[in-house]
Image (spheres, helix red, strand yellow):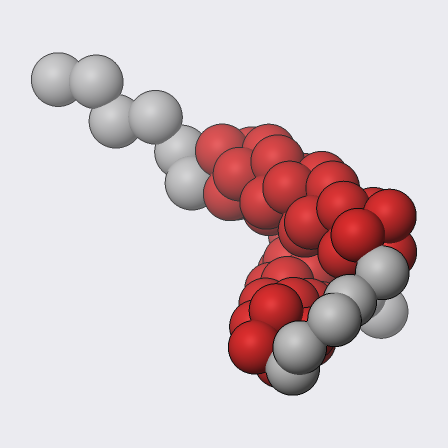
Length: 67
C-alpha cells in the first residue's frame, strides 16, 4: 500500500518530467520559425504552473530543520 509520501513523490516525479518535456517543446517551437504565439504562451503558462506545483510539493516533502 502506498503512503501519502510515496504518492507525493510519484506526483513530483511526474510533474518534473512534464516540466522538462514542456521545456523541450517550447525550445523547439521558438527556434522553428513562425509560431502560434497564443499556443506558445499557453505552454509557458502551463510550465510556470508546474514549477509552482513542484515547489509546493517539495516544500511539503522536505521537513523544516530549524536548529
